[in-house]
Image (cartoon, rainbow, N blue to C red; front, side, top):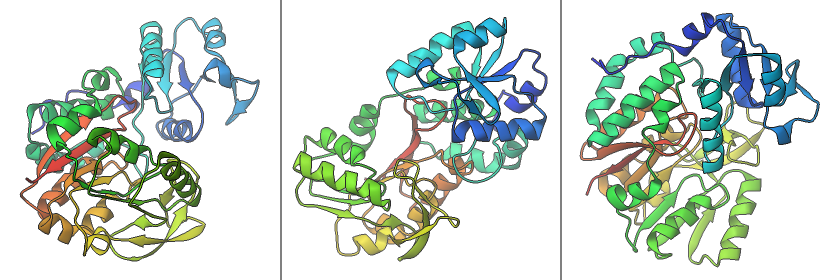
Length: 356
């Protein structure tokens, strides 16, 4: 059993909270937190945003205030963080705020339904335990422990204690070389291609990049031209378990995703179809909730070429156990690692795998 999981649900704690509960941030994250609060009968007493975003407007019926205005109104209060924080400056800002007012970051899934609460944990404890048992090193196990406790409690210190830089992954786990045949399944504007090139000194065997969002694809091709990237295959398609077409929710940013309710239809490919006549030594899968389908469509490639892997473990509640278990089912020789990079909430909690 996972005896290291000591924390109770943030939602039960908030039900018993006597201090005013204040949301920090607006947008999709705040909407999801509000929905969870309504489900549990939790009262929200106000909303604030960073000073530069306060313009006398409202959000979901609440006037958006500055922190100073909230502090003038309430002597003490609890803050719920409702947006993603990953830059060093913003992370420091949250740490400073946490010293003045307790800050919790509720875990709400990026995709899919339900909350990672005590009931969900108990229902899937055996699968989580199986996933935990697959992890290769002590750092991976410690990160897994803290991520689970964070997802239940929302306590940001669980994440702040386990952050590691991506450079550690590239040099100590993936050990990228100068002849990699790299497949990037979610290219966005080319930022992860640039990250890859920085690790390999700009050298590579081949690079293939997929990006289904039309606006993002234009950004990707523009960056490729500006940076002088040569001999790269850039494809305006998405990834799936087979070659077909799928509805797509195009948002012109990082959060575009395949969705049954999407208003446009885009072509999608499988890894095996893309790589059937090509070498593949490294695959990055940050595909907004389609990681499971991406793995299913890569069965032949994983079994025959055994590329190094980097795949997200945070888009859906089940990703923590479903993805590593699926990978091991497809190709048992993979060694699986788990790392959390500087980010609040538990996004950028990623699995890495090698089979060499």
